[in-house]
Length: 263
Image (cartoon, rainbow, N blue to C red; front, side, top):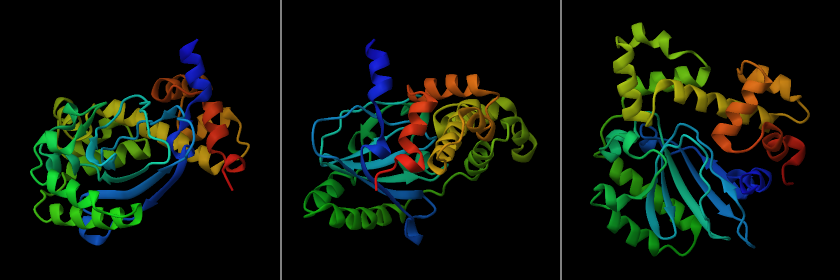
């Protein structure tokens, strides 16, 4: 019963406040695909679903720099009402060399940056803690990332190719010849750069395509969403969406569709 209540009441993170994305400045574009901010609603805490997307993020939250590792299923963190979270989403293949650790060690975890050996974490946190408001914190956050990126290792090119294939719905088997890798090597590289294998990454990116369709839709039937999203059928979509998000496709469509967005 508690599980069913969570499905009925959970909000996707983007609906639990004001979420905005920004293109990173040129010095950061090798390492980060998006910068973002999320101002949470005031009032009683809501059950918020953070759903998997195939990425790893660096967050400024509750006066700490935190690495949010890749997720395989939805997470339901306790978020302080009225808080603003600032984040930087690593580009595919950039997180593991920047953090100097495989992402398989961070799946489903949120870890303070200082705990994974970044010597500049305490200094960055002190400087961010002096910011008078979220806007100033975002500007400083960008500058600090630029400082750190000067000495950062280059993102892995094979990870970019693997992610692009998963994002477009192409099976991992099409990459063996292109990357000169065996199936075993590809699996090892995926676990290093994404935290899990190519099949899981494909499932997660197909789920994200479904979310994009829901955002662009108003009254698209669920069967059509399944077809356009690349699922075998509506039952397959319902099963996959439920496993990855703990929500039903109908609930997600209701939250994200054009007619249900806040004005």
